Image (cartoon, rainbow, N blue to C red; front, side, top):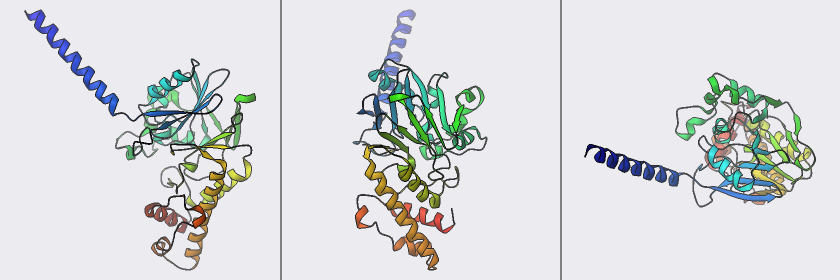
Length: 315
């Protein structure tokens, strides 16, 4: 009788755990896979859902020797990313490039095999290894900063491959070119060009068609330098047709990036003119409106205020 009761209890408990696990799984935000070119894909969030969802967009390039990823979304999405990769190819993930350190772009780094080569800009590597880093993980509602994941035994996930201004990975149609054009969203934003696919991942240097968040306090981003960094990218990079933005659900076109650079530089000019005229930040913000030629770009008042305030401070 006791054995029967125990078996019944265990069965019920198992069913309850399965139900809970299934419900938790259903509550997770979905990943959407888009094919951009031969061997190049992007893992985005579902446009029907709202908020941060899965985090930043993840690019997937299938190379001759394995899979290269750009960004790993929020902590907890490593297995989801691997599941999507397995739907595309049976090749292993060998390389992960992080466009910058923030929790929604490098959160799942430690959920991949430690044989993966992690590649970042040298400033991003310094932030990840810092003992007092703050990568914005608090915005997720959690108490653990993402770069705290790279301590102890998990320090093996710290990037070993870094670059200063430009480097390339692989060759031929698989070649990936990495560029650093200066401070912006952070002080280590990497632009990732997939040469064969004529595509580029911008990270949060163009998160979407709207004004950026500038992380000036934690990762030395600069609202002032953001403008010249965009211009440098537009003036330097060639043979790119498709833009993979940091968060927008659908890919953009090269001309969208060109317009974005002009849109942001217009705000910089107007902020500098307001400061030179002796107007307050509030007055400059109140007088700002999106120019008609950039009417498809969003400029929420709180984001305008943050950027104008930083420009006034020379940051």
